[in-house]
Length: 70
Image 1 (cartoon, rainbow, N blue to C red):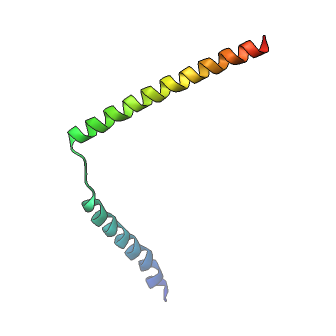
Image 2 (image 1 turned 30 degrees about the vertical axis):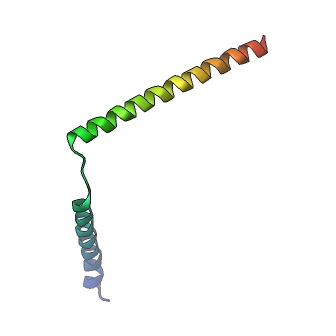
Image 3 (image 1 turned 120 degrees about the vertical axis):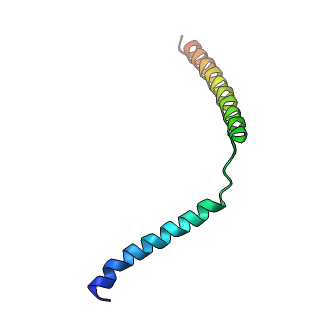
């Protein structure tokens, strides 16, 4: 392999990689606006539920620790 071929190899490999990426992106199912909104609402509700749960556990543990130390 001479110097010119070794310089062309990364360029051709990069081009091949980008072409394969583009081909995979064409296969992706992109959600419509309604699906995105529904998924966002589900995530927000889940975060609120987990936040309330962790807040409650934190509060109960802090009360228990204060009681144990007093």
